[in-house]
Image (cartoon, rainbow, N blue to C red):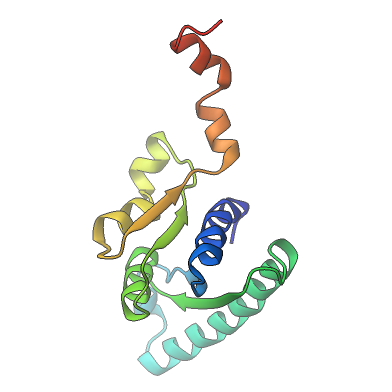
Length: 154
């Protein structure tokens, strides 16, 4: 979990309160490329994933307690796999009406090489996706003076 995720949480919490919706906080542990080959048997690999998910759930609960608190009722969930595919599948299986995700502001070569999980989810999900640009990224991209200059405001 990152501080960028908090921006998405603000929006999700607003929708949750407005529509009395159940909020899930999903954290996906990415499986290393070729990880299934290194670990040998499927049972061994799944046991390792379950242990990682349990540790991730503990960390996620700490993150929620530290940053969100008890004011917002959340269902923390940790899964392992390809983030975009896991998010899509989870949202569909749970019958969600909306996915809210923060963008991380990658640009240039890093974006081209790594892509964006949020962008992939938008492309593959049958569930609507709201992407949220955290305040520090919005400020870095567009400043008030830029708007005033472009609109020729005094």
